Structure formats: C-alpha cells, structure tokens
Amino acid sequence: MVNVREGLIPAVLGTAVTTTGVALRNNRNMKPLITGSIIGFGLAHVVLGAIDLVEHRH
View 1: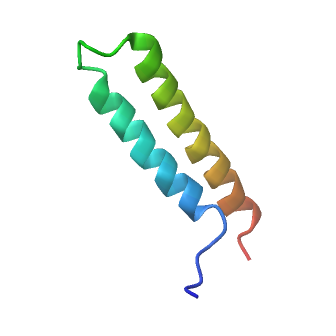
View 2: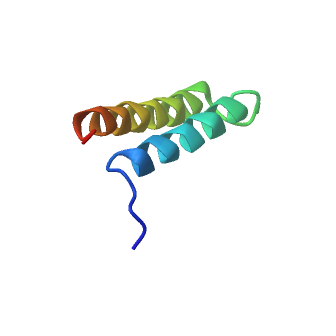
C-alpha cells in the first residue's frame, strides 16, 4: 500500500467539501443553512486533518 501520511486524506477531503460548499453558495435553490453546513463540515475536516498532520510529523 502507498505510504500516506495520517491526516492527509481528511485534509484533502475537507478541502474538496469546502470548495463545493462555496460553489453552492451562489445557487439560489439552496438554502444558506445547507451551504453553511457543508462549508462548516469541510472546514472541520481540514482542521482535524491538519491537527493529525502536525501531530504525526515523524
């Protein structure tokens, strides 16, 4: 298996989800609560992934 640093997958996933949420903000059919929740969910993954990356540096 490929050696992937712990925390990299959640950080990348969070970036993709956050980008999707930001792109959906301009969609008038989506309520702001939904897009805000998607952005928050993505940002939470980015933060948790970054914590894992910093914590497991060696």
